[in-house]
Image (cartoon, rainbow, N blue to C red; front, side):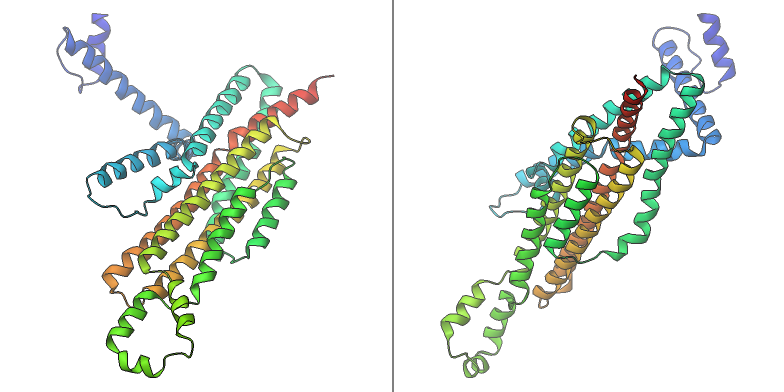
Length: 363
């Protein structure tokens, strides 16, 4: 053992010179870390796809943990504030709508599926192994193409009516051959669009109050014949703070329902398909499904931004702009969460393909 340590110290000058007790242990760990980093660099250089795959896994697998940590930090911050007002914190609202729970469950399912894929590959060799690897790579290539598609379609979000979006989702889920209905997602999406439509045409409360103070005489001359009706109309309007809070809450709810839908789809692909469908075909349908979700969320965040701009037109830029930027940021984050959840479905489809291949191989 001592000769091996001396050899490591000669080969790696960065190792500490001590040979006794703690220094030996530290030097050995440093040596292993050094060798491990070198090995990872060699793998990355020899395999161009290794670095991208490693980065993708780090980004998706830790997503729920990142959101949970952000939520806990916000809870601690709010606990120190003496206020009874509701706050529009995306992470906390996303968790309240069970989005974080479904994301964590999807990550667990994805990790378990990845382990099954690797275990099954290890049990094969020769021609069978090469054929299966070719099939699994073809599924992976479809998922990789999804990222390229997002770059072209993200800026082309269509403002569809709630009924059109619901019909599209139902059609795609039917095409997947899974017994899933997007009821919760459609209800959340419809609710978000409805409150914007109901309040968009009204005059903001802030603007009415300012107008009453500055031009009271002119308003008295132009007062409508039915003052009760005018007062009733004013009560329907939202303040800029209310619009901001509802925008963030709606984005969190809709995104949580999207994650829940993808989690449910993953479970049904593994355990409850109405009839077998090639994994490659299911991957293409899932691309259409998540693209539709991302487009709708992007469209929704744009509507919130426009509504917020209208309601806060009399606010100073330093007050309104942070709210607008926050809505746009959370809209972008929402589409990112949906895209990452889609990537977690890759091992699920690969396991499904293996299961189908095994069942077809049996007499």
